[in-house]
Amino acid sequence: MRVDVSEAKFSREKLLWEAEKIKKEVYGNPAGEIHGLLVKGDGSGLLAATDATVGANARSEVLKSYISMSSLTVPIEVVQRPRVRSAGRLNDTPSYYGGGRMLNDRGAGCTLGFPVVANDTGYPYIVTASHCGYWNMNVRNGDGSRNIGPFVAERVAEDLALVIPNEGGASSLMWDGGVPGGENTSPEFTKEIKGWSHVIPGEWLCTSGSYSGAVCLWQVENNFPLGYCGTDGWGTYECYGDMFGAWQVEGKRGCRGGDSGGPVFSLSADYSYVIAEGIMSGCNDYPGDGDHLYFQDFATVVSIYNVRPRL
Image (cartoon, rainbow, N blue to C red):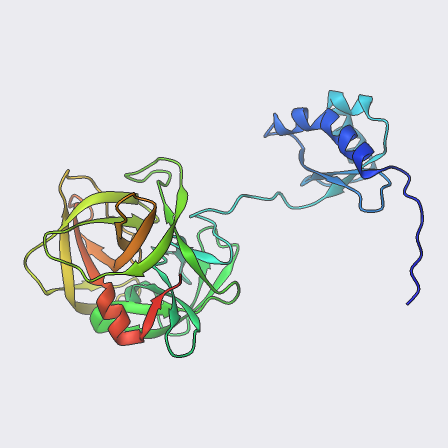
């Protein structure tokens, strides 16, 4: 195979040095036309990415709007590219994490539970609540930009279902922290999932719904198993059973519509990782207080689907 080698007009170091001249101005102006800077791979100059229409006049106007452009000593080309957004709980990308928001075919939201793998085949799934979808319905991430995959293996009686991720497989992480407009509005972050545990009446647990954010100080009720009935998003009246109940002891609205399917978990002694304990199902949402939770325990998930959390 023949390889032609030619000398680049500018070195990578030179182009990075020139880019530094304008980075501060670009990065400091979120409302500006330019949302990205790139170094050309052939060493011929820089690229400035904009989501505006890029005609000949538009290129000139974009460059004129940045004072620092006048100090450049290398060519810069303006190209039209979609604005890139950081992935998070509300617009997750593969591999999908537990606690991410998902949308059904009507645009209604629920929450992804724990990513798992099948013990017999090693195949990846994500556990969630069955009332969030129906067999073979594809769900999307929170902003609708990604098709996560189809609903399968529904178990209505236990309010459980699996989602098969189309790409990226299963993850070993879960979204923790807050969500805009939720009970917890702190910055989001992630934690590793390291195994699962049986639910014990009286123990303290946390939840991570994609509408409420992560909320702790849920105390498991001593009365169990628990069943309740309700109407899903398609108007079907269903009853779910063999569940646990828990109260948020500070009266916080830690459970609301859209949190269904989300992780119920306990924390390690040093709070560095989580243990899967269950899947959120329902709560006394408004006109209630959102401080009472119904959830399916993870032992039932293991028993039905023969899966384990992705480690």
